[in-house]
Amino acid sequence: DAGVTQSPTHLIKTRGQQVTLRCSPKSGHDTVSWYQQALGQGPQFIFQYYEEEERQRGNFPDRFSGHQFPNYSSELNVNALLLGDSALYLCASSSLVVDEQFFGPGTRLTVL
Amino acid sequence: AQSVTQPDIHITVSEGASLELRCNYSYGATPYLFWYVQSPGQGLQLLLKYFSGDTLVQGIKGFEAEFKRSQSSFNLRKPSVHWSDAAEYFCAVGAGNNRKLIWGLGTSLAVNP
Image (tube, rainbow over all chains, first blue to last red):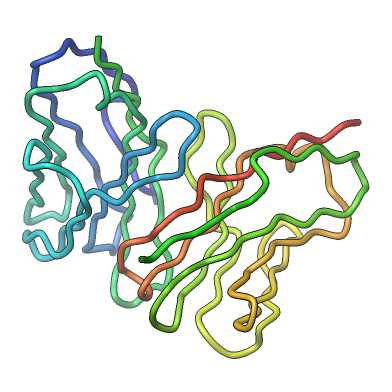
């Protein structure tokens, strides 16, 4: 079992650009959650996808959007990047039959 | 408002010493409580969780935590720390399994040989 995988590992973008981050959930999981972790902070919940729909959303602007595919993998898109979007983006997968969210290693996004 | 407070930003202990990391939460409903550990360059790993029942829960790597509803606390403990325990520790609260987690700022643990 590969666990939760995320790509890319690192990414450097400039202000105003757009970025797409990808996540493959752990085998058997159907729910994907995305978190943003700024340096020295705890993770902040962005949104959660289940059955290809956004089920919950945190306090993030519409510049942050996502998608879940039929195979349960997910993408996080961020438009019009700001310097403040620089962070570690974490993906977590889960399902209704397990009582834990499993986290991937994250994607480190740097906005210059 | 829902929140998690970890009062200690950084803690240093000697190897073999006992450890207690504090966590206080504010949550309107019955909380689901979690402790995660994050090592440099690694993702978050669940140490233990509390949903209901016995208020003293055992986790992996010799960690335990006690839920005290009257104090809104869920402190993490370990009787004897190992050098490999040096990491960032996060307390989190959620509405239940599979729901969004609200996180503390974390406590950075350093272990002296």
